[in-house]
Image 1 (tube, rainbow, N blue to C red):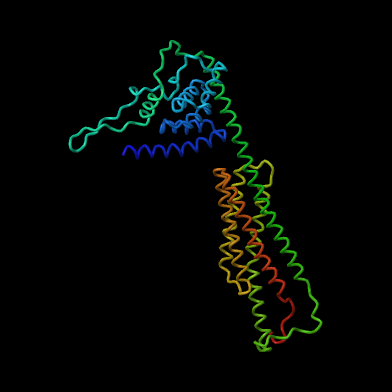
Image 2: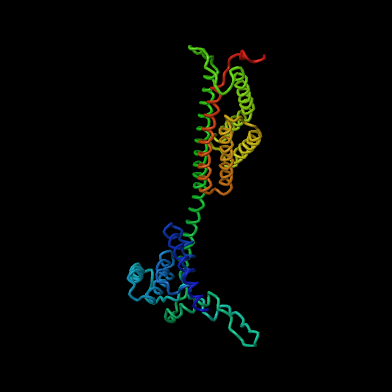
Amino acid sequence: MIRSEIKANEREAAQLFVRGVAAARGGQRRLAAVLLSRVVQLDPQHEMGWLWLSGVLDDPKEIAFCLHAALAINPHNERAQRGLAWLKSRQLLRDDDTPLTAPFARAAPAALPVAPAASSPDGEVRKAPMSWQARAAQALRRLIPAPAPSSDHTDSWWVGWRHSRQEMSRARALLWSMPVLLLLLTLALNYALRAAVERNEALIAAELAQRASAAEPQSPPVNGAEAPSPDIPAILEPELAAEREAATLAYLSRLEEPRARLRGAIESYRNATSRPGGSSIVHATSAQRLRDEIEQAYAVIAALDPPETLAEAHALYLQGLELELTALDHMLAFYRGFRAEDANRAALAMADAAQRLGRARQMFDRQQAELSFGGPSPHSPR
């Protein structure tokens, strides 16, 4: 049982060590100090844990304690020896300083809380498991010799004042950097969304231009009318073609109203988010309004019954609207937590939605151009 607990502690210490090293390399010294302190508490024989912990601490005595602990594990550790020599050369460490001045060794095992003993059902008294504080102190006392008595137990007042000034400067730098980071993330998301809106507007403009060119009167064919298909009697083909065109025109006419509302909602969102000095609250409100408009348009379009020639375009258009709803959900999540992954997901979903909507518009325009705008067929009853 004891071996399994030791192995579990070593695995947890190894995982925490990797996270602590990553935090130290990323400049998060406080987080690294907490993680690496837990590493050496779980595994006091972790030589690299003591070395990395000495690199993220500020107190010279605590740094010396960690270096002494590493030397107790490996007396030939050159990095620990160079670190102690560096502290002494800068007069940051006196010769009479001992490793037990560090915070990990200040709490003696006698001062730690002792868990009450537990009795087994057969009456045998068993000792309760020791807490992690007691285990860390006991392991450190085995690694490091007892301290020599010293008469100097106080530091001068200016040492504490200097440390407090350093902590305050770090806190001020952190407080000033957070709004800047949030502003940069907001600007990046707005840029991606405005680019997606501009692409959609370009596709809408191309669609309107194609419609205008298709509405122009076309010259009749030089060689006469095209021969009817042999599968359908010549007298019935104009009637069937007229019915198909009527169904297609009816579908496109009903589709135009929700699409016009979507264009207006996109224009309103662009005007609201492109104003200089806009806050994140205004952008989030505009995104929520745009999402509501897209959801209403989706319900209207999904209720339409497309003809066979536009079934694929109908499905692509609905897929594009679903992706836009997903992108707006990620955008609203970004405004709530300002996480970069939400902004990236919103930009990717918006780009995919623009591709699907563009393909659907091309199919709509091609079908609109193929419709005949001439007078009634000579075989029609009216």
